[in-house]
Image (cartoon, rainbow, N blue to C red; front, side, top):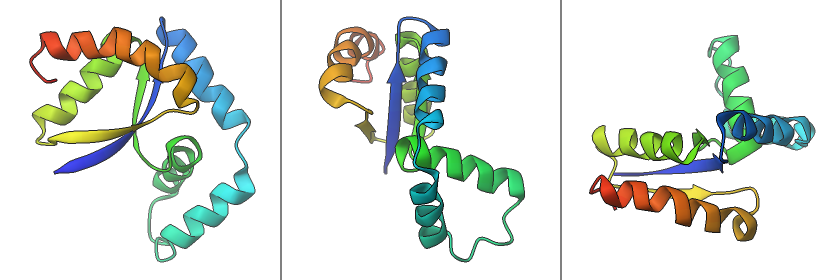
Length: 117
């Protein structure tokens, strides 16, 4: 079983959360609402707070599992996915070229030490 995730990994939790908020502040909400409408056309019975969460997750990572925080916190999130039975996850980044090297250098060693990678 596989899933997909959106990564915002920074040296501090505050920096990661600030980046996630920056992404939300700059989202194209018209496009997000259209996407949500298309993918959740029959979701009128969803609770309002769940629809709001779906909308935020679609804006930042197309609905993927959020891995937001320090390298250790991101590794913890991937570890949780592993422990509940996921055998892998795709990873999305807002700017792959800029962000992946930090992820590679800081998160992957933690996962290797845990025997997950």
